[in-house]
Image 1 (cartoon, rainbow, N blue to C red):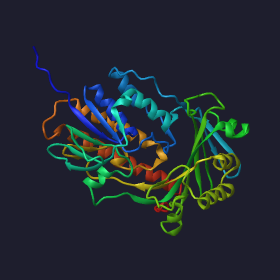
Image 2: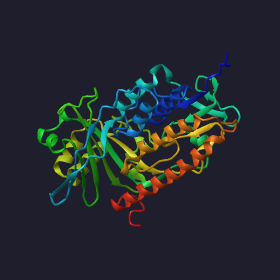
Image 3: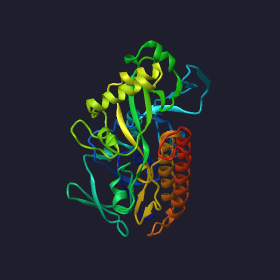
Amino acid sequence: MPMETTPRRAIIIGASYAGLVAAAGLKCHGWQVRIVEKSYERSRSGGGVVVQRRMLEYLENHGVGFPGVASIPARTRQIYRPDGAVLRMPETAAAYTSWDVLLQELETVVGPEWIERGVAMTDIPDWGALGTVEFTDGTTDTADVVIAADGIGSLSRRLLLPGISPEYAGYVAWRGMIDESDLTSATVDAFCDTLSSFQGERTTILLYEVPGEDGSLEKGRRRINWVWYENMPAGPRLSALMTDSAGYEHRTTVARNKLTPVTRSYMEKLAAEELSAPFAEVVLQTPEPFLQKIEDLTIPRLVFGRVVLIGDAASLVRPHIGSGTAKAVDDAIHLATALSEPCDEDLSCLAAWEHTRLNDHYGLADYAKAIARRLKLGTDAAG
């Protein structure tokens, strides 16, 4: 009789999009996964997201049943101009959903029983020979591979690359999501089935429809997701805006329902002055907007012995080309494919994966910066 082999095992730090796709991919190849997530609740801070077909195809090709992602295609692209003109053209390349809907559906595929919430990683004392991780409850665990998918503020990255940190790009993104039922019918009609944008002298905003919180695709029960960019130099004003209602200054994001009244008032005044009417209505009626600093980060390595960085833990790409989710999916599914092959103790099978993914990260980062310059956003906008 053939000898039974012990399934290979991965610890995944972060129930993020990248972490869940990596877990689903590894399970396609017979891996056991343990996903640890410090948050007790599923993230709501990400807003809207482009549906990545490559992820769906990968799971389907490996026999993983997936109900599909509730999403809304943008059938038209609309560009609103300051002079009141609206340019329209076909847009069929993308479908949009929201982080809460997407993560819920991915958790169903992975299996919620594999996700341990309220558990945070505190250290990686051995990332070479053993892949050992320490947690807040004082326990340790060891796996064949440790996959760090702990996002923008990745502790894993800081432990492995203590001298490298994200750099502020010189502008911020105001973001939010609003139920269509909270908007006038004229505004809902104006943005129905579209990817719409407005670029003024000092501002750029983009919005599109996503499913309702319950996954509804029916007009009037959906939501509109928006992201609005504002140039802002580092300094006292930025520090004040990044300080939440409890007096804590955040490094990256001031979450929903955490903006101070002064910050909210500043945003509303800016919207009324800078945006065309339908965009201003969307922003002004949004109940829980949030604020994010735009940052850049590329790193020289992704593989550290038995620890691998993926998604936003590995690099940060500005959001203008919708590439953050594509990058996370490609990191995760190509990693799962690489780990499906026989691999020696040094994980040399990951050398080609690291090489190709780093090239992709750097290429996407450069392209996104070029888009920002064209939109006159950031410290290098004049370059």
